[in-house]
Image (cartoon, rainbow, N blue to C red):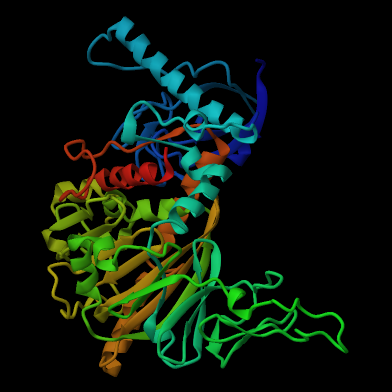
Amino acid sequence: MAWQRVASFSEIGVDGVLGVDVNGSPIALYRLSNEVFATSGICTHALALLSDGFVEDGRIECPLHQGQFDIRSGKALCAPVTEDLRTYAVKLEGDDVFIDIERPAASAQVVANVAPDRKAADGVQAAEEDSKANTRKIVAMNTEPEPSLTKRYVWPVEGLTRIPDWVYTDQTIYEREIEKIFHGRTWNYVALECEVPKVGDFIRSNVGPTPVVVVRADDGSINVVENRCSHRAAEFCRELSGNVKEFVCPYHQWSYDLRGNLAGVPFRRGVNGKGGMPADFDNAQHGLHRLKVTTHRGVVFASYVRDMESFQDYLGPDVLKEFEATFDGRKPRLLGYYRHTLPGNWKLYHENLKDPYHATLLHTFLVTFGLLVAGNRSLMLADATGRHGVMASAKSERKSVSSDAKKEMRAYRDGMTLAEPRFMDFIEEFDSPWSVTMATIWPNLIIQREMNTLGVRQIVPTGPHEFIMKWTMFGFEGDDDEMIRHRLRQGNLMGPAGFLGLEDNEAIKFVQDGMQHVPGGQHLVKLDPAVAAGTSDSLISEASIRAMYQHWRAEMGL
């Protein structure tokens, strides 16, 4: 292929990086002094865009997990990246930058300490190419009819250490997740009891993408019904929350009681003996679709399955213990909400909180102030099924972080201080050895306990590439004014613009962007090979992610 003009030299800042698209492929251009170099624009580890990364000393640092590559050769320089970047030949003519995507850069070399076994290397390369080719075939087949999902969606031969892109990007897979997971044998978080304390109180919620209404009935029970009129499917409840004596659909005025029973149909018998419903029309057969409901320690869950196991059995003893350490018997008190949309697949949020590895690298605030640091006493817990998990850590003092650990944690900032010193105060109030816990309750709930700021996060998927995150911040009845102020003060860690939340949101977008711009690839999740899948006491681990996908594959029949 001939040389192609891709950019102007003046567009690329000195020691900077510029992302361009060449024939549908992302390319990263780098300027080192008066030289320009080009590589593939996607990190080989987790598919983030390198144009969002950082250039330093002739290296590009991935913005997601901070792996580094040599710009001139494309060579992978440090964990977690192990696969080199592809490089491209570059030439300059005046202010014009040209590349040839068929030719590697002249300086691109593979350096090895030992001469490779050519036959073995060729076999490994062939297997890798075959695996990538098979995954790309899946993308091409998405619009073609296929009777067997197991033939259409083939998991990589490497097993749980590889996750194919179609898990996160395919519409058919997403629709099957709604059926098998959110509408399957799961308990879905829908509300806190303190959000509907009085008879007639209601709040709109979701089970997966399905809109539901949580309402306190006359007998004190909590009911969860689909937000869909049984007449013409209109979403009858339009307010986010409130108090009512009945629900009335705005379209044709059909009314329902607080348990979802059909109470009234205007002109049911017609007018002047004409029209109306058939004589055998039975209101009892046309109520709202009601879900099975359970509550535990002030938290409300719903399921489409009538014979669901108990919530305690659903969590299992280890995760239940952590759940009850946060919801410890005190009645929750509502403090407020955040709500925002994230451009990523919903499972990436679960992964993010089963990935303590990133937390020690990405989050400046966490590592600098000792909340979650490699070397802390910590745990990445997975239940026996692999679906639930708890990331836990005990707060350390900054002075206890070793100099070697600081070198690995590029996000660490010596000398960073807080204008408000009370921000990091930890008031011990829980029967737990951990100062930080993040519990992921499958499939849609995150329970956060960051020192004394408390919240639940509800995942609402809207498609394979997007989900809504609803944050509900709470304290407890009995909290005095100072404790409420303290919880709200520490709440600045969280939310869409929080000191921690903002970085996670961007990282999730980077991953989804990488998959959409260069489809048909695979994610590498090999960290902590001593634990095949499940609980690990190391923060440098992806074993809990592997456990989650072991469960996901079983539930999805894949």
